[in-house]
Amino acid sequence: MGGGLAQLLAENDYELLLEDPSEEQMDAVIQSAKKTSSKDTSKQFSKYSDMQKLCDDLDRPRVFLWSLPHGGVGDGVLGSMLPYLEKGDIIIDCGNEHWENTERRQGKCVTKGIRYVGCGVSGGYQAARRGPSMCPGADDETLELVLPMLKKIAAKAPDGTPCVAPVGTGGAGHYCKMIHNGIEHGMMSAIAEAYAIMRVGLSMSLDEISNVFDEWNSKGELQQTFLIWISRDICRTKDPKTGEYVLDTVEDKVVQDYTGEEGTGIWSNTEAVERHVPAPTLTMAHYFRIASGDRHQRATIQKIFGVGSGKPNDDHTAVFPPQKLEGVSDRKAFLEDLRMAVYTACLAAYCQGMIIIDKADRANHFNVNYTSLLQIWRAGCIIQADYINEKLLQPIYTSKKEKPDEINPLYESDVANDLKRGFPHLKKVVAKGVEGDHVIPALSATLEYIKYQTSTDLPTSFYEAQLDYFGNHMYDKKGDDEEGKPTEGKYHYEWKPV
Ligand SMILES: NC(=O)C1=CN([C@@H]2O[C@H](COP(=O)(O)OP(=O)(O)OC[C@H]3O[C@@H](n4cnc5c(N)ncnc54)[C@H](OP(=O)(O)O)[C@@H]3O)[C@@H](O)[C@H]2O)C=CC1
Ligand SMILES: O=C(CO)[C@H](O)[C@H](O)COP(=O)(O)O
Image (cartoon, rainbow, N blue to C red):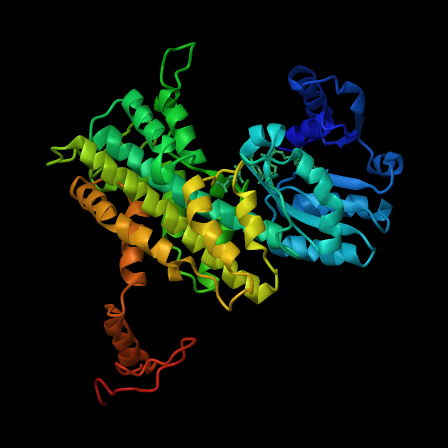
């Protein structure tokens, strides 16, 4: 990511002083720039292995931009620079850093007059090279200083507006990028689940599935959705050396949460729970990927259930294998159900993410600029979804000039209508999927979400009774609920007098 951003900055006429633990990596960046740049940028790069020398050689005001693994690495790099930094220097942290680390570092820097920007970057390594979506958070004055440079390199929406804008103060940029990734995980899971339904449930070939994704991407509610258009490409990509579909060679495990490379999935779900925001599309997608990550454990459990050898590499099977869907006489109609089911899950993921941001915004005084945030997500990012962003969410957020106490997309009739419209399609897909033993965690969780989030008659009356029975936790009587925040119940019943 850092290498791509460096090349992009060079192409935009900036001079780059590179620093990396590996000289080879710096050479690779310079070589890549030679091959891929629209002009000769080789004279704009120089390599450093000594932080003091790099700091001395940089023109004032000095701007440091890095893209590092989160946590200790960033702390270490900042620690190695701090002795040489001065008032007015600017650091732009483009990694996926935890927002609390960002705020801690901002606190550390501010005492020396150093400006620290927490800038989430999205779009992957290719966008880093050609134009990413960038989500910077810091005080207004600092953002004003860095925006001209970031605007030059950021992705541009079709109307030319750069996908970078001031998002908020403190750790707001990294916070919003973290939730971007949470939304991304919900969307990815729903699409992966739909892929398997088509492949196994409808016995479709990869080329056929690719065509379906292409159609979904071309019009309607999933139009210009990054994850749909890359799904089209993933399904049709063959390795020219072997003639095999690359997808058919990919093992079924997502390991990022185990390796500690990334933390955004864990953090966004922890945030949801801690802020009391039901976000089941995000959370079920996350549980699904952590279950997938430990293939050895799955194989062991499978053997105990009486299937397979227990060795992760021997088998690609299941105790309850997904089946061809029964009773789908009209494939075209079912594919339309599937399209709407995926759209509904993607929309729910967006809503859940926006609600988490809203809660955190008010609790942490981030002062999030939602119009900026949605502008940032218009192009160059993984959750680009034109209909959801431009047709549904932008009108809602731009109409709220005076920030109300709470911005909740579920309170908005256009979003509500779409979730209502998607519900019967999602229900059909989930019902068929359940019948055929398909693995559909994000889709089924979204169906449940829509049901419970729109009901005032839930089985949780029974749950509350259980809590009161064993724990004297108190309950409210029907009709007692007061407007406002949830409060402790007023009644206890001696269910089993001693
Ligand atoms: N990959 C992606 O699609 C995206 C990644 N991100 C975020 O960007 C950041 C970088 O990701 P990515 O480029 O994929 O990761 P890489 O592992 O490719 O790059 C990490 C960089 O950090 C350097 N580094 C590692 N350890 C140290 C250390 N102790 N001291 C100094 N430098 C160190 C590495 O050096 P060396 O090259 O020598 O190993 C490398 O240059 C992460 O925070 C990631 O979450 C954000 C959006 C998209
Ligand atoms: O930030 C990203 C995209 O937006 C990166 O691709 C990141 O590596 C994805 O990791 P994770 O799935 O663990 O969030």
